[in-house]
Image (cartoon, rainbow, N blue to C red; front, side):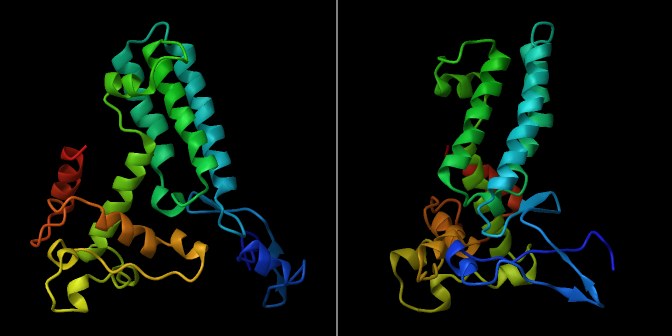
Length: 238
């Protein structure tokens, strides 16, 4: 058994409190070490899926890269610094955001502050420079909008069957359940699940359905768009 294998008990704080503090998972007489944070495919998992540990790692990584921008901004052009941001920093802020985009707002806001800091470092302006103007000067999109776009792109891939089967099967259009022509059915809306708890609203199925239904009808064409055309349609609306 590989020593890389670990054990983690997932669940809400309330449910986890009802379980013993320690539990053992054995595979062929090998007891797996219980951990509170585990890196899997570049994403740090924690028992409650709060994503705090992962976002702390992202912030530390981005902070170091912003330091590079700061140290080189005196002798590099703005375009070059912008390219460095696009290639070194933005991928870290985007990576798997469909998964951890349901994190608490206080954690997500810290990433927004880092984006603002990077932009103002590139423009060589002070911290009081308006964020909206900063985004406009650099041609950037704020992180909240980027996460919403990435979520909708993933839902679109599920609808057009370009995603794994287990994901494609969780979304259903209103037309799949009813032949009545309502505004929602005409617009290609999805049927969101009815969560019994607030935590249910954090699921990909719920978040994806709600976000999709808010899209302009142009993006939800009756004739499915290719992923490239779908991304273009969303960008044209912002």
